[in-house]
Amino acid sequence: MRMRIRIRIRLLLFHEMLLSGSHFLIGGGGSNKADAHLVGPSRSWVFLVKKSYQDTDTSLQSSIITKVKGVIFTNTSELGERLWDAADYVIPPQGENVFFVITNLIVTPNQRQETCAESESIPDALCSEDSDCPPGEPVVTGNGVRTGRCLRAENRQRGTCEIFAWCPVETRSRPEKPLLGKAEDFTIYIKNFIRFPKFNFSKTNVLHTEDSNYLKSCRFGPKSPYCPIFHLGSVVSWTGSDFQEIALQGGVIGIQIEWNCDLDKAPSECNPHYHFSRLDSRLLGNSVSSGYNFRFAKYYRDEDGVEFRTLIKAYGIRFDVLVNGRAGKFSIIPTIINMASGVALMGVGSFICDLVLIYLIKKSHFYRNKKFEEVRSGHTGNGKVTVEQLQNLQTVEA
Figure 1 (cartoon, rainbow, N blue to C red):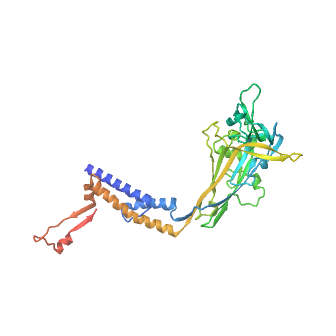
Figure 2: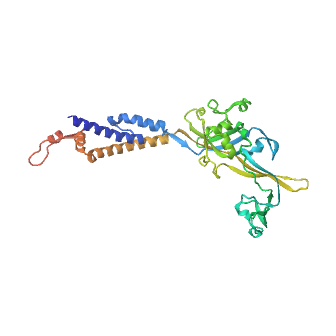
C-alpha cells in the first residue's frame, strides 16, 4: 500500500513539473482544477515581469553633446611655462560622442623640412655604406625619404641613412610621469537627447530647471542622477582603473547610457542608467601595444615666411559615449496574441504529458489504471448489445 502511494506521488509530481514547465514558458491557462494553481504564477511572470502585454520600440534615436572643462599649468624645457585649457587638450573640440583628453605627451619643437639623420630606433634606416641608402626611397616605418648618404659617427662601422624630412626627428621617450596628471580634476558635461519614434516620446538626461547656476554647482551621483556633470577622476575609478596609470600611456573608456522606459507609467519614471567600463585591454601590462596615443602637429611661419612646426605625440584617454534602450507601452494586439498562444499551447503540453506518463515510463500501467476506470457489463449470447447494457456501460476519467 505504501509503495503504491509513493509511486502515485512521484507520478503526480512529474506530471505537475512538466505542466508547470510548459506554463512557465508560454504563460497558458487551462480548465483543469489541478492546473489552476500553475496558471496564476505563469501568467504573472509572462505578462507582468516580461510585459508581454506591451508593444515595444528599440529604434532609439539619440544625440550626444560633450564638453570638458578645467585648466592645468605646466613648466617644461620644451614648452616653457604654459597654461592648458580645453582648447589645448580636448580633441575634437566640437564635442561629439567620441572625444579624447590629452594627459601625457612628447613634444618635438621647431621641425623644418630639411635633411638630417634618421632615428637609430628605425631598423630599416641602419646602414654601413652609401649603397645601403638608395636615394628617393622612403624608410619603412620611418620619418622621410633617403638621400643616398650613410651618416656614421666617428669610429663606428654602422650608422643611419640621411633623410629628407621634418627635422630634427622625434627621439625623446615617453615621460615617466604624466605631464597633465592633474587632469583627473576636470569635469565632463554629457548631454543626451533621446526619442522613441513609435511612441513619439522624447527626453533628456538633464534636469529641467530654471536655476542658471544648477549646472555650475552640481555633480553626478546617486543623489543627482539628472546632473550631467561628471568628475573625470571618478569616471576612471568607476571602471576599476587608476587614473595616474591610465594617464601615463593612455586608454579607452566606455560610458554607456541605457534607457529602459515603461511608458504605461509617468514620464518621470523613465530614467537614464549609466555604466562605465574600460574598453582597452589591461592584461597587456607594459606591452608595446598597450595604451592609446597618436601624433598631430601645429604649424607656424617665421619672419622669412618659412614654415615650421611643433610635433606632439599625445597620450590620453579616449571616451566613447554609447546609448541604447527600449520603450514599451500597452497594446491590445500583443496581449491577445500572447494569451491565445498560451491557451493553445496549454492543451499541447497536457497531451504530451499524458503520452509520457501512459506509454513511456516503467509504471505506465499504474498511471493508465488511475487515469481511466473501465466498467464492463454482460452481453447476450448473440453478440448484440441492448439499450439497457449501453446505459450501464460507462468510462469514468480519473
